[in-house]
Structures are given as C-alpha cells and as structure tokens.
Image (cartoon, rainbow, N blue to C red; front, side, top):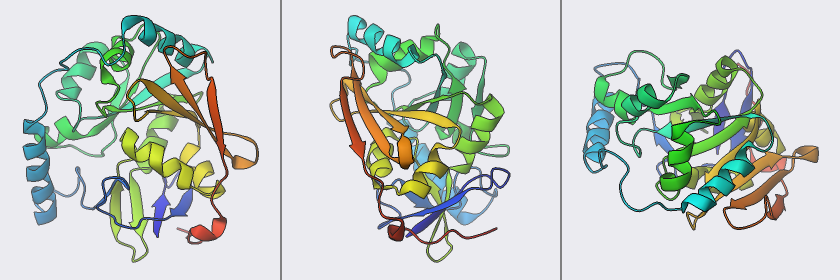
Length: 266
C-alpha cells in the first residue's frame, strides 16, 4: 500500500496500492528524487542514472508523424471543444531539450520540482505548461508525440498557480512504512493503468481542480480521456482522428475503499 499526499495548502491525502515501488507500470521510485538535497549519495546516483538515460534520447523529435495531419486536426478540435483551458505535463526524460523547447514555444510554464536544480536534472524534470489553441507544442504533441511517452494532457478551469500546486503535490507518495517515493503519474503508460485502480477517495484527490486527464492509448493513434462523473465514477473515452468525437466510452467502477489505507492526518 502507498499513501499519496497532496500539497499541504490543499490539504488532500489519499491511499492506494503500490505492489512494487520500482515497477515501471506503477511509476514510483524511492526518494530522494530530482531536486532533493545536493550532495546526498542517493541524489548523486539518480543524477547519473538520468544522465545515462538522457544520452539515448534524440536531440529533437524525429521520424514520421504518428498521426497524419487530418487526424491530428480532428483530435485538436475534440480537445478544444469543451472550452476549458488545456495544459500538458511534459517529461523531460522522454522529450529531449524540454526547457529550451518550452522557452521557445510557451509563455506560461514551470518546473514541477522545487528549488534550484542542477542543469542536467532540469533537463529531465517534469514541467507544467499551458497549451493555448494556437500552441505549436500542442500541434507537435498530436502529430509526433503519440507513442513517444512525452507526457500527459490535462484540462482545468483553475488558475495556473492552483494547478501548479496540485500537479507538484501529486509527485509525492509514501509507502506503508513511511518511506517517501516519487510518483511519475505524468508518464501516460502509468496514468492509464493507475487511474482505473483508484477508489473514489483516490479519484477525488487526484482530480482535484482537474476536469480531465488525457493519455495516449496503447496504439499511439488516439488519446484516452479520463473524467470524474456522478458518485465519483471514472469515465474513460477514446478520442481518435477518425472516429466521431468521444465515440468509445466506458465507465469504470471505483475500487472498494477497503483497498486503500485510511487517510493520515498531517
């Protein structure tokens, strides 16, 4: 079992299962995580691991588009149809030169790791950024990003500061022994597997000010849209470039509350 604790100011905490903290599908790893105290041995070890991983990432997106232009335009219309603002949480470990890419194409973005980071850690950190309708980053994600695990999309009516606090808080989780873990929920392979396992309390906490999460599906041709419905039920819908908007839908019954530990107060 693992406890997920949100921002202290937001005051939410929730428990959920973590069978193997280092499992890539669970998306957790022991802390200290990037941005931890400088000079600590675990911190230095993680820096080296991430540096080695970064060497194998191309300097810029390459290859043929995963989705053709017509399909990406259809996906874009579906994403923007609701009128709410669209954001992305990008993974610097999967999208090379992310800070420079954001500096060039976004006016509103922030690193989700606190404090001043080593430049190499800053390259592989997660970042929250706004995606307006005319965003070149949004076009890039829809045309070349699906299947590359660059990150997730979210929709929210909250202001950017509130959203930043929520997304930053979701990075921190604790196992049953109280050991801190780093939760890579912004990896679409993690999010699409994890959300259906949550109980109602988990879902309320993880959604918070977020009205919808989007993660690439396993075929890399569409996006899974996760929303929280009546009685805190999770609804997933598949958006593709060829199907009618939100054509495929499924309601996932929340897991039993007994599957998670009780809430722990601060």
